[in-house]
Image 1 (spheres, one colour):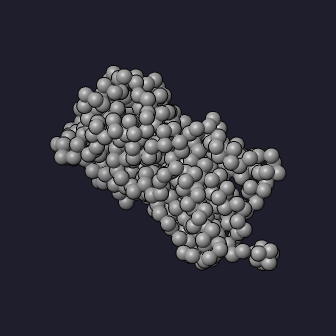
Image 2: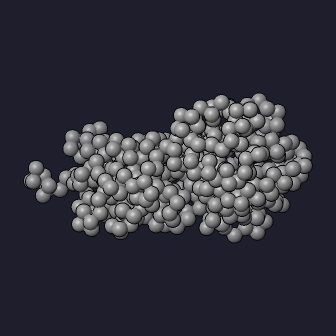
Image 3: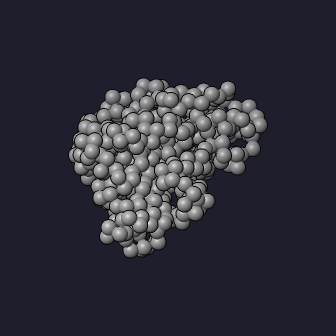
Length: 430
């Protein structure tokens, strides 16, 4: 092996993030300039870096505005960058969304709208349908994010309570040409779920949203229930003529990032197996399952022979019960470490590719065979930390957090489990 385990895993994460940078992937998808105006709009954690990349190569005039997360702004000369709150919306996101609608009003067939969307846009595009207020929208977002619902379910509810999601932004651009460039952060790369689909048709219904709310017991304000029960929140459906001149392209996605990481492992002489780019479910449950696979490799050389790396992406969820500092990646890692019980030769990294796991400016963390032992010696209880959803405090206390700052992109979660052959000392002990 050419690298130490932590160095190798960190290099793989860096390669995954680099592969998803807009500057590397936006150019092949741009259309020719139109006869009329070119307006740029968009939202998401990568939207400012997408706007910057577009400005540098666009051959004609353009103007516009995108909304990104606080701390994710990139200098642009012709496109205004607005920063707003994520994951819980704020007034800047609401005002930015309204400005976006104003920018695309009154356009003609000769005009072109380029919409730049990436993960995080669902919270950043925060203009609710009347009579829902921003404060009510914030509370709904908090409830959705802690309910344990899958991202596709969360986005279904969002689409039916928004003034721009579920195809409504595309309808506002009509009759102009509309091209949406997407950086996927959702399992399966479904365009209707990326940013809750503001520029694509939505086949789901208000009834679907109501079923999700009831399934997870999510408390909703009266205004939201009235919107859903009356059908006033119905989204733009397939075949609607206002979408006739709208198209979209996915310019990068989780699979592309995983393949880039696998090349780093290959260069280090370690076989790498991409298990899936769309793993969902409770983060702690996924951790247990991944531990089971890693143990089968470590002890029986099935289904793969050690050394190897088990690579996966997707978006897990966390049903928050405690009051700790956590995110889905550190929740996964804590559960993984507990289930591995210090298995010799097993190391792992799990990070959010946007650089923020949960609400903390921490991407994720590492685990190693001595993680649990070091925790106990530091008087930290791993199971208690997991029960309190307190992964960041746990890994921060061990010095095992991954802190990289804003990556200016977002292709969801990155998980790599490295299984090395057992050491000679460990084999003799057994």
